[in-house]
Length: 175
Image (cartoon, rainbow, N blue to C red; front, top):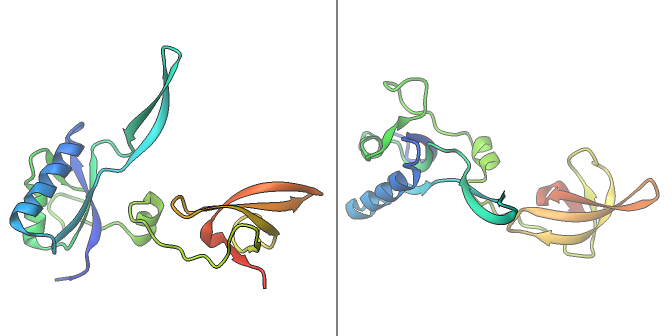
């Protein structure tokens, strides 16, 4: 039995995502199962909707009908998640087989887990782009946003200063 917790995708009835997540969190709390089921997540995004000529920020589910659960897969944890009201099962090849966890790359792409990226540069420092289409270019850091994992670098292209948005791990300091 693996002791490592992984992210799994749970299918729910449409519109029941938040209810399934809160019921699962309550069950974990009541039964003291924090060691088996660590996190429950309903990925959402904030979008601006225009209705009747007025703009309004709305929170929208990224994956309607799905809840992400970080857990250690055991028969007990499987049973608890599977039998939450509104849950139809784990996402996998078939309902009879073991659920397949998300890969580390999928978790990173979904942005479910916040990963700390330590940067050795600050605003005003010269940096070299080490990944992406502008690899090898050198520029100056204009803005850093650790929460959004982004950095804006001013790069000289075709004789003009051009701002470029990159991820924090796509640049390194120039020695």
